Length: 514
Ligand SMILES: NC(=O)C1=CN([C@@H]2O[C@H](COP(=O)(O)OP(=O)(O)OC[C@H]3O[C@@H](n4cnc5c(N)ncnc54)[C@H](OP(=O)(O)O)[C@@H]3O)[C@@H](O)[C@H]2O)[C@@H](O)CC1
Ligand SMILES: [K+]
Image 1 (cartoon, rainbow, N blue to C red):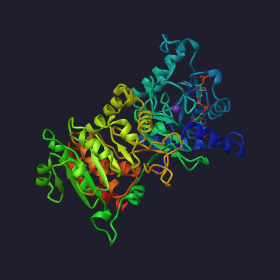
Image 2 (image 1 turned 90 degrees about the vertical axis):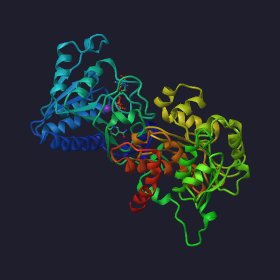
Image 3 (image 1 turned 45 degrees about the vertical axis):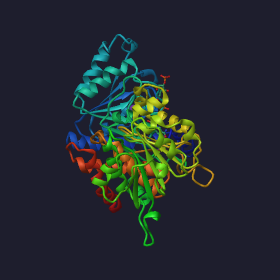
Image 4 (image 1 turned 30 degrees about the vertical axis):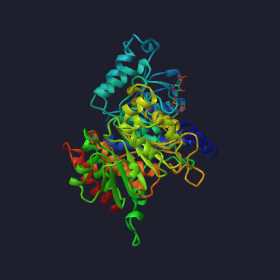
């Protein structure tokens, strides 16, 4: 499991550790890891550290201190290091002294440069931009977890020069300008090739849009003692393998779980077929289809139990999926919402579901909107959801008392208790999930942005619900397998949703093999 903690938690752990360590020890640990990562990159890109050109962008806090110490380390190994001090009078004093002792140079940005209109027009500003353009490696120590908002005006031309230069850009702890806790980017942020982060991932390193600015992420352990429950967690193969349902010797179809699919319409029979395709690969013992596309479903999947009447006339199921392609018929949605089994609501179902009926449910509910659907439910613009995915998923989960799987570039799964310490599965909670951490899916691929792909995901997640997984586990395991299946199926070329469904067993085997 990869985990991320909030800035507040990191700060508390840092205070505890600092109290037990000699002054400056923590920063030197962080800087040593940072210097090692940069030396690796220089070795690969430039051939060696000796003789390479390194530029440090140094802000007013400890983030700049990390960069100065790491720069000193590289200077001792023969790199030509120039530190651009964005607020010279507030630069980390001990770090700066260490860099100077090691032979590093400095360029001091002046107040005239910091003027929003000056665009680094002074001699110092011009020299700083020129140094960035010539650099082999640029280290971004402008701001870390102490930051608010985007880059300040004097930093923008430097960040742009770094992006345009051929230099490898390494962000210290976080790319400057992104929000560590939410993954939001309000204004300009620096784009890194690599982020070297300390002690733990921060939420912004795992959630878009900030995640895209971080490049690849390397975690440097510094000995922080962190609490058991993180803010965010990303499943990995071993976690998913532990959660996947495996039939025992005594299993029959009911023990493995029967999933009911209420999807499709005369106009959109394909949604039914694709949801069933996903459900057949999700581990349930049987798939029951109830709706107007029964003929299409049985023609494609003869193993499905079909009925062309509504869900309330269907036989026993252990979980329902409702919504893909049902058009404007609210009947099936109302019917499944009163069933005392887990329910997954997707697509048209999200629009048609009565919010109070969802909130009144005792069995788990899993809602699977994309950003546009989430925006409609929240009454905001789609862009707002995309800019603040974590907040949107949590807000929706709280409003509906449901688990919410927000699809997109980074798919998130938030339980109804995410952020307020509620929602557990120990008999007192509502069975939506164990723990409060929001799950972020690491396997996504843009090839999955294809028509019908969401229907496959719904069926898959519904099948896992029927097999007995909690809403949070079913959603995050389904997203994981679906992403992996998308990668397998695509293999660098466009794919259709049915290809993704067919690739699910391969993804499953992949996970089980580790
Ligand atoms: N935690 C740990 O375990 C460890 C932490 N370590 C390191 O310390 C870092 C945190 O250091 P920190 O607390 O000094 O804050 P930091 O991010 O340097 O900001 C400083 C000041 O910047 C300013 N500022 C704000 N927004 C801004 C913006 N957009 N653009 C420009 N400037 C902006 C604002 O001051 P203002 O100008 O507003 O008065 C703020 O106070 C952390 O990320 C990690 O690298 C490691 O060394 C060891 C282990
Ligand atoms: K930074």
